[in-house]
Image (cartoon, rainbow over all chains, first blue to last red; front, side, top):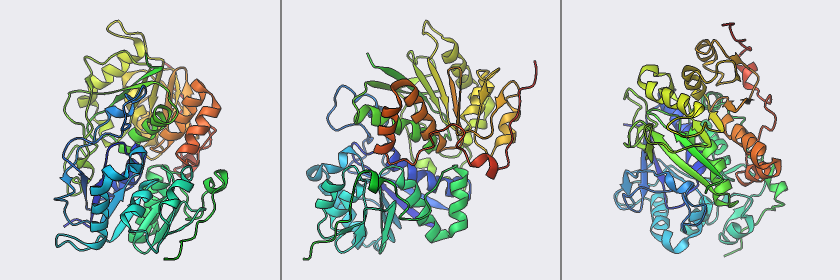
Amino acid sequence: MAELTVGLLLYPAFEVLDMAGPIEVLNVLSVYMGKSLQLYVIAATMEPVSPGPIEPGPSSSFAGQQLYMPTHTLDNAPALDLLIVPGGPGSNNKEALQPSLDFIRNVYCGYQGHPPAKYLFSVCSGSLMFAWAGVLDGQRATTNKSFWTFITSNGPKTHWVAKARWVASGNIWTTSGVTAGIDGMLALVSSIWGEDTAEKVSATIEHNRATQSDDDPWAEKYDCQDVPAVAG
Amino acid sequence: MAELTVGLLLYPAFEVLDMAGPIEVLNVLSVYMGKSLQLYVIAATMEPVSPGPIEPGPSSSFAGQQLYMPTHTLDNAPALDLLIVPGGPGSNNKEALQPSLDFIRNVYCGYQGHPPAKYLFSVCSGSLMFAWAGVLDGQRATTNKSFWTFITSNGPKTHWVAKARWVASGNIWTTSGVTAGIDGMLALVSSIWGEDTAEKVSATIEHNRATQSDDDPWAEKYDCQDVPAVAG
């Protein structure tokens, strides 16, 4: 039995570093520090998933050539301890993502006889998908600062924290833009395995880490303020 | 014609964030800022390449499930402006990597009628492969700090700079451990497209960037000193 089963939810036009930041942290735990972790890559179909743009354009060739292979679909994903949802250009495609949003809700609540996941973790605009899935209602959360107004307005029942590299609220971890996913996952590792372990991982990847959740210069740079939840 | 053609050289057991850091920087340039970039993913064969360990072990299941699809092999790779080589556990497998080392040398010198690449860029222990390929002879370089003695001893004709997040020497860019690849690629972007562009990319990914090449706390933490080149 793995110490932690991890599901990575992918969809077209995800952001590559949103995915790789948290996965690298867990890889180091697995490969260099001997923790027994199990990764499942989950997508709508078993076709390769590309971080390229949804609409091919003149510069689409760049990102479009990296392909990630799912191990499971939304319908046959195994029980998960931790679900990771990256952001990216594709995350605002609400209609097309509805099956993935249902999946997030199911993982949060428990489904097909599986217990609820212990942790949900989003990077960047992955929190938009969490908001649409309804799992952020009544919670505190953060998201990337460059789309602050758009994303927070799509989660009216959530208290959005602006000056936050990450927010842990209940069992839901949301992180800020892209590289914040590295800091947030190190914080989650610290909460599970202790700060010494998190520091060892951070030193292994030579990451100049934000160790405090409010150690975030980007809220001010993008002039973002907290957005309280709307009652009801 | 793309403004920059980029080759990403993959091999078994590469480090996932070594790959994704620089690629994310270039993705943002391509997807959000409209630069026309072309990415080729190059490997020994067209089989998917896994960042998992070479020797499957008890915790190998984690990293082993991510697969990246090559677009070209070492034998038919197109002309490149920029070659990116990630590090990782697989990078010290010298014998098995010999065709990849030959490829690096060829890209550096020009081959099959292609001109030499404008830039070579390594992350972490990717510099070990550069050293073995001979392209660091007479150059200054850096590498990850946790394998400092091993890697520097494998590049006796190179001046190894300890306190360096990255080193640009001639047209060869070497970066320090894992996340240094983000800072190094932002520095390369700055040198090609200007500092404003690099800052925009850094802000988009909310990266707490090291803007100076010697802004590296890890040399001291790992007690690493410069290693001068041995004459001859």
